[in-house]
Length: 250
Image 1 (cartoon, helix red, strand yellow):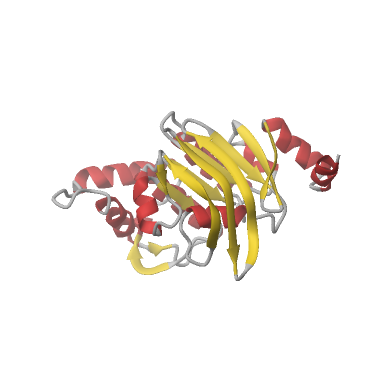
Image 2 (image 1 turned 90 degrees about the horizontal axis):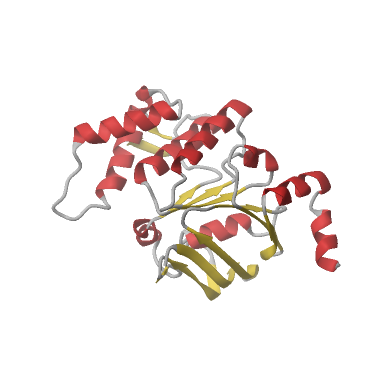
């Protein structure tokens, strides 16, 4: 089973239901995009799939390559191959980027295995060069004092090094200028391959000019209301989300 399949997912926070019977399938080898207005449940979906403890799942399932992940701890979900790039990446004072990523990789190895330091830094520097990240950043604490663009590039760097099976990018374009957006999009595009599924969550069509999705989904009131190709994002850009309401009523 080479896909992430979400069926009839319902979730709430503080007794307020946000996801209301959401259905979505992301096969490996495809890039899907979710667009939708504020409050439609986009970020909630990403957090629920990553195992965020603040959200209560009341029904449904999320099957990752044949294994149910709802109810698992975030670390266990991550080890199965799900990666979440946050809309607002957290600072981790006192932990360098190099040590942070190395610890994450080490945590995925068998108990008696260790990381080859030379090979690790060769891969790390190569990924940093691709993303336009100064190699001196390896000694800086994760995201501490970083600009918005630097934080997002650091997230993509982690993703590139961990090589997850499924990547969820929660509004990665938020706060990026055009140059940073192009660099981040290039990093995401380099991750595309037949063995990886990618879900891009965004408000705006501009990101999808650089990361061309196989499918675009419109989220509305906690569910997937419309699905189409790249042209759906262009239609949303031109007509706005009121058009979605009109389509659903019709």
